[in-house]
Length: 181
Image (tube, rainbow, N blue to C red; front, side, top):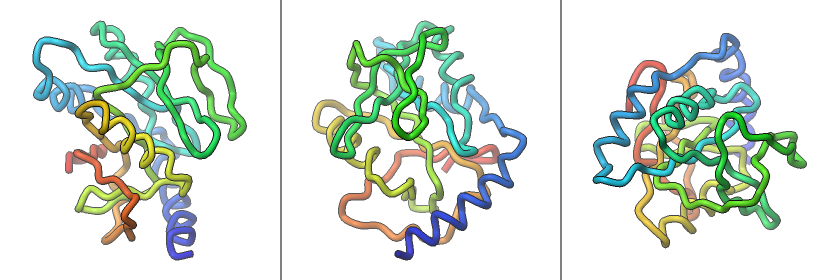
């Protein structure tokens, strides 16, 4: 119940804070990713922003220009999702939640995931919408390969402590318009 009330409060704050659609700088994210790459370019998983989330579409577009493969999630049954190949010019389907998704033809396992959130804390904990989609996906992908988990948020979304359970997955970084955590 506490998480539900917290979500409602922070979503209102995020809506006000992001009414001008604040953009994060591509170079911050690019530097983090380049640091961990060897010879092979990383596959970048993003999301289609909804409900005043930080918009990552320009970031994905920049990665595409630099010849990185990009992908977006498709929500499946039983609170699961997978990533599918996508670039900025590809068509999208609208899912049952009203979120645009790529046509699910080429499943991809990203090396880097850009993750939206409702709130975060200084310990790199993330509060999402409550379905556990990203937690399950991170658990699944972590068994296949080492992935870099980057949360995208506004500083206004930071709270003192996120209540966590054993299923919640920490992020590696959180990038806001003001700093990298």
